[in-house]
Length: 170
Image (tube, rainbow, N blue to C red; front, side):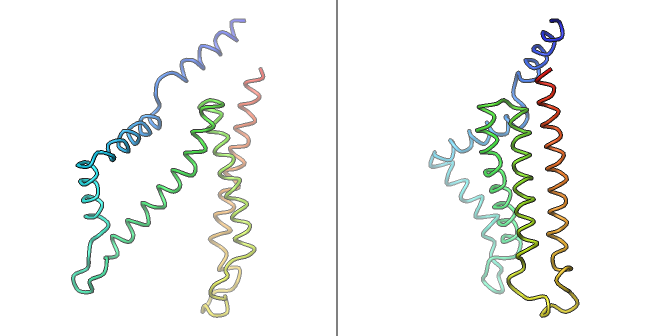
């Protein structure tokens, strides 16, 4: 009985308060609300234009820094929205820890399946015979490495999820 009371108290203690990720989410929410205010929105558009709209004086085109920064920002935002929205929905239903484990397992499982498909069916563009010095296996090495890395993380999340469920049952 004391063990059960201790477990309940430890869960309450760990689930209380806001984590750093939740604090960042609240700050992002406040910024999104502020973006609806016209002066704040104009400032944000000017700031984004300063970073992403840098023009090369010689060619008149957007410079490489702006293109790279835009690509990194879009990739980070897409991953945050894709994974974060699933985590948020799960968090409201099953709690913080279980949501993290389920989201990690699902994300890396999806990456393993996606990586296997990429290894089998890619590349469809330039054929390996047209690339000097690279054969078909060498062209697929980065995707094979990413698939193996995602598989290891998938297994780690699966083991952690199994241990979490075993702890809950005790």
